Image (cartoon, rainbow, N blue to C red; front, top):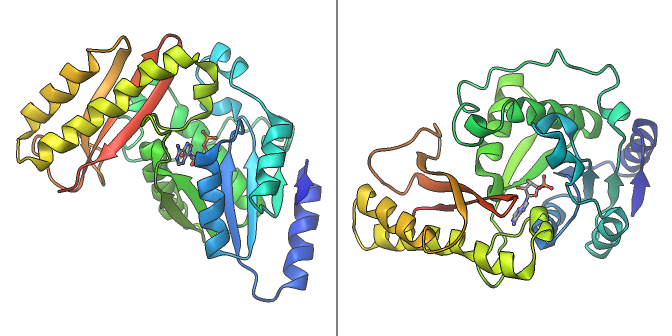
Length: 282
Ligand code: AMP
């Protein structure tokens, strides 16, 4: 596996690869590091689709709205490199902030048609501007044919897909399933910040979401579904930020449930903010 630590190195590895392979297809997995099996599932999906897999590891400052959160975001670079090697990634790009934002690019703007105003957007000011800014920059540098994103960040995949259309970018966004611990807890880099006791407590999130899906499958309406999820959630000790049932396309809250809906949740387990979601299906 090659490691590129700046744009020049990235450019060099990519052009060598393209020169040697006339049928080149590049799959890209952008990450913020502290890698786990969830990230590796994206690498695997990329490997099965393309012949050159690029991952990036970059803790993007513009998508954090609290410096304290940015500062304590887990960073495990050497373990990340080992895990990517083991999973047959071809190239990892580990840029510096200057590499990504050479001119302190603060004049970035994109019309996200309100997709950024709901859920995460309500609680994390300008978060999605930061996400789009970094993803667009990374796409421009890596020029992938396919980019792989996890449904774990449901709103993010919707917004990146919208951004790709809005900007007319030549990349296909692939949306990949959520990987979970055996306990049901969605894998996340932030899980590293929790004690075993807290991780155990945090399983209430998936338990509550799953119970909602079951109640839906049993034929109950939205009010009963929400009531069930909340009653299970509040059996635990986490603090709820939001629980919303939204339409998969518009991301707007719905008043009636169908198979095109997802329940999304954000909650604090101690000081660690966790998100998760389940799609409704009969
Ligand atoms: P992050 O490093 O948290 O920015 O995540 C990088 C990519 O990995 C994003 O597309 C995430 O949605 C995806 N991802 C994170 N956790 C999981 C998971 N548990 N299952 C699947 N994909 C995930």
